[in-house]
Length: 128
Image 1 (cartoon, one colour):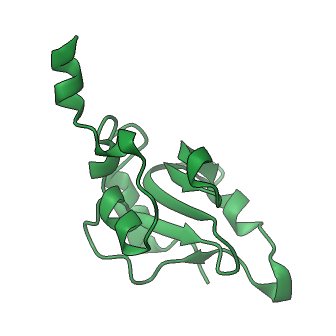
Image 2 (spheres, rainbow, N blue to C red):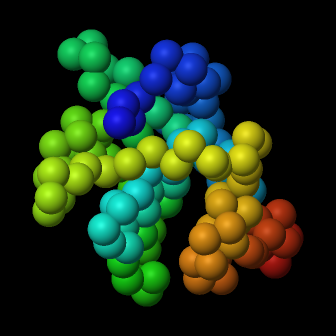
């Protein structure tokens, strides 16, 4: 399966790295990648195309341990190079709803949502 399509490339032009900064759980998920044989899931919210054609992507990554899940960076080539048993590879979720937020995407698969994704950033600023 192709992990990057022309449609995704166009969408990422609207969501370069840093464009959804501070939105936390309300960030729009552009694409979701997952391990079909395990628990790893990458909810990608932003990406920049590099000169070599690779994509530097940013999003919420859960590699199977909800306590260690976090926002971070991953290169498209890294996901493409993951080799799984029986010739399987990382997959792209073809059924992710359009305009899905991070919280909605996590709820859709029954993933535990960390408290800091639910917090309202405006309320935090008012406290200080």
